Image (cartoon, rainbow, N blue to C red; front, side, top):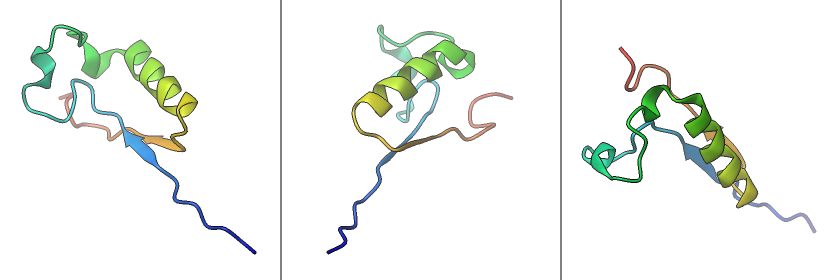
Length: 62
């Protein structure tokens, strides 16, 4: 019998999805352009079973 599994993903948004999340003290001030931040977040997500990551270009960078 074949089992179908739902693949979960993460949408990486620099400062976060909430309009005030950039103000949180634990968030890096340069999250929108910090490749290391994106990499660490993606690796953490992968280690916890997330199947894919999506980065939309132009969300925060003008």
